[in-house]
Image 1 (cartoon, rainbow, N blue to C red):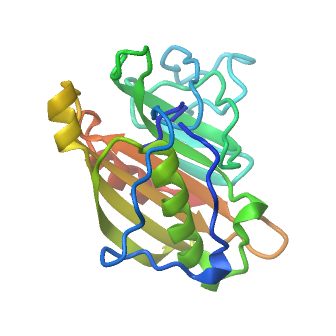
Image 2: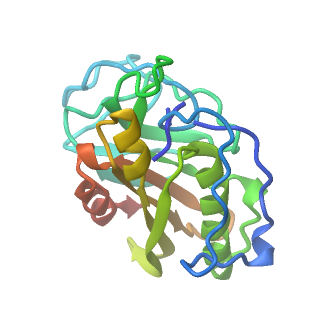
Amino acid sequence: MILVVVVVVAAVFLMNPSGRPTADDSTPPPVIPTQEPTASPSTPEFTEPPQETPEPGRSELPRPQNGRIEDPVSGMSYAYPGSSWQLPANLGSDPLGFTWTSGALAVAQEDYDGKGNRWLGNILTGELPDKYGYDGVPSMRGIAATLLHATESAYYSPEHERKIVKDEAIKVSGKDGWLFMFDLDFSKESKANGWKWKKERAAFVIVDRGEGRKPALMYISIPDNLDTSLADRVIKSLKVS
């Protein structure tokens, strides 16, 4: 999950994907707390849950229509997770270089740290930034591992354990893609601090959109008190134009 921080972040050193870092449980990257986490890359403001008929000019981000959110920039579209998930009025800046062009957020806990910060669940899409060195479909797995290293230290600073769930090639609307899904266990810290969530499921989906177009990227991070099975349902609903 990101904490915005829409979900949270600090500047981190990013490994060049050409170095092909492995993303398996045998060699996990160290968990290095960098700053107080928030549910994603910068604290957003929410609009009220959107209606099926969007109000023009209400938000710069796409609103759900016919039960789906369509991102005109990345070409991704996916099932709207429901009225308990809100649209951010803005996503703010992201130190990891992401520019999210659609999203839905839900609050897992208000003021989880006693400092007024919210821990959020998030579903975000956009184009993969150039800085991650995309070099065609064969580079996807290495980039997914780089994204894990960067986001884990930046967004998930509380002590936790990590388990890789899926690390595999997929097809999305007939296009080549990569799914990297992992579970994070904050049970120890949750018990000590009285948090409302204990675990979180997160995933990256990278999709190649063809020559001359940047790859599409989806990032999902959902705490268990918001129903982690939602991550699988949203990914199954994903389409790319």
